[in-house]
Image 1 (cartoon, helix red, strand yellow):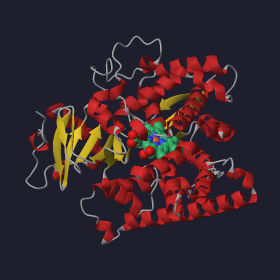
Image 2 (cartoon, rainbow, N blue to C red; image 1 turned 180 degrees about the vertical axis):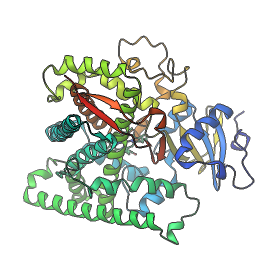
Image 3 (cartoon, protein in one colour; image 1 turned 45 degrees about the vertical axis):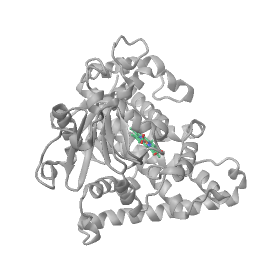
Length: 464
Ligand code: HEM
């Protein structure tokens, strides 16, 4: 006998609106986890008109992720909100449409392109190095999160569009400042039971509109530049040098992409590539300063591998940075920037004994399982060594580890993200000691589409 949706346990809340008044949106991801302690791995929660099956069961999650795009789709409202703002690309496309978008995105982000762009990435790493050198010399206290955001913006725009951007050395008015306004507003609109902005636009809506317009115009300009490049250098049609060119060539070859779809995919990659990697780097700094002995362990690795060099310069050496890799994996386990995802089944289905109806809403959260001892030994402990080959950790359940999603729609940018993280963390710890200035206990998780940290400040000291 399978368990029906209406039989699921869950918080009662008030009639009709359920837990709407108990919900604290910036902290919603933690509320889902807390309720899981009380009601288990599958429970029901009503938030206004949204009646959710909340799932933290690793096997069900894996099933849903794998059965896409034909068995499950992302929640329809997500697509509606994103499309309304001109974002239509691999992330929110479904079915056949998604298959075409996905092929393009995967091609634009493949290892061959990353290798070709490696030298460009080193320019951004060098800018970061010089900036931090100056900060260390002056003893400046600064927000390192802001630097990470600028760094990932520069990398993504260069890799995806062939645009030479220098947000790291610009003051104010950068693309990244406009992008900062996008995710929080999208998150708000996805959660708003009533789309108030359609009736009245307040100051934040107007600022969001302005930022979106700036980005829209920029992307138009980049597309025009890309078309011109392809005209002037037809050989690029055979071998596109970046993501934008690949999309344009495909579009010309009858790939069926409208101009809006081309734009939507560019915006998707820009949004998906920036915040996720920057916030993961930020969380790594939080954890590494909280567990200071790990700074020394990273330093031991970079000192051995880099010798007298200040930064990585050889693409092929990246695979050797196993400890940093472990730090990144462990950071994503404890502080995942995408801890929840929303899905809808395309037909009635029973998974692991639970019934899910066609068109119902499933909220999947996975950190609860990823921090349980039954899935990872001493699950709440920051222990990067567990990811090393020689690790003696007896429990290591990869079904409960989903920082980049899974199945056919797993994140196509994960290799790029890992590459960026290795470049930055190796340079940082080879050259500097990082001191956290803001007390760790004052640093909070904030959910705004991605799970970011509240602002914090650090001070760098040159290593002797
Ligand atoms: C630490 C960094 C990152 C994390 C944690 C992350 C995480 C994720 C997650 C959880 C998904 C949903 C996967 C699913 O539905 O199964 C996703 C999708 C996606 N990510 Fe990432 N991501 C990161 C970096 C990047 C970068 C650097 C790019 C591109 C420059 C990127 C592009 C995308 C795209 C296009 C999708 C949609 C894929 C699809 O639906 O087929 N991501 N990412």
